[in-house]
Amino acid sequence: MKIDLNGVLSTVAQRPCSHFDERPDETDISLLVIHNISLPAGQFGTPFVDELFMGCIDCNAHSSFSDLKNLRVSAHCFIKRTGEVIQYVPFEKRAWHAGQSEFEGLPACNNFSIGIELEGTDTTPYSLAQYKVLTTLSKYIMQRYPKITPSRIVGHCDIAPGRKTDPGSSFNWPLFFNMLEQLS
Image (cartoon, rainbow, N blue to C red; front, side):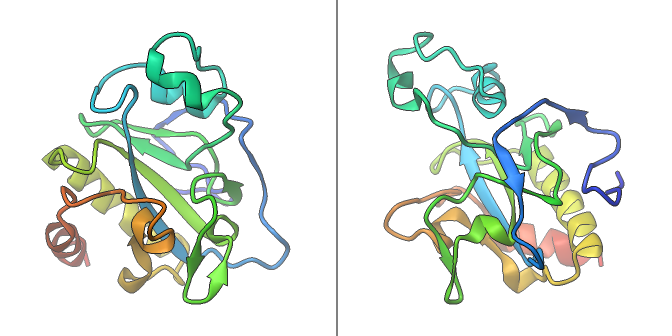
């Protein structure tokens, strides 16, 4: 797995996505944000996350999707429970994953962050395959974007407290950071 100069990962599936734009001039990529998602909530292995990020989800496919109508969101990458990685937005571009957010006094985290979605919920344990791939991917991201350090890897809940709760209590931060340290 390598990251080219445009922020595109080699050896992972690339999906067409129009839900991104240019980062502001002179923006340094310096934050990694971990999220979770499942559509419908708590169901894994469906095509709906893919369709949401590609902007082609049928909001009539499930009763819970009515809130998704006209929603334009994306992530840089999505890690399925199997460990498969899909990239929607090159890292050099601004994905729309964080919404209203702030980190260390800086608002609009999408401007300077990379967003990775894990297939999961706040309360369902993540798979070992997800931790392994997330760790490897994080290491490559940290090498390519050296301003991202372990202290600048956070959950969505950390940059949008009170509004977001992911990746939730089911995310094992000590395990993840231990695995990340082992790769050093």
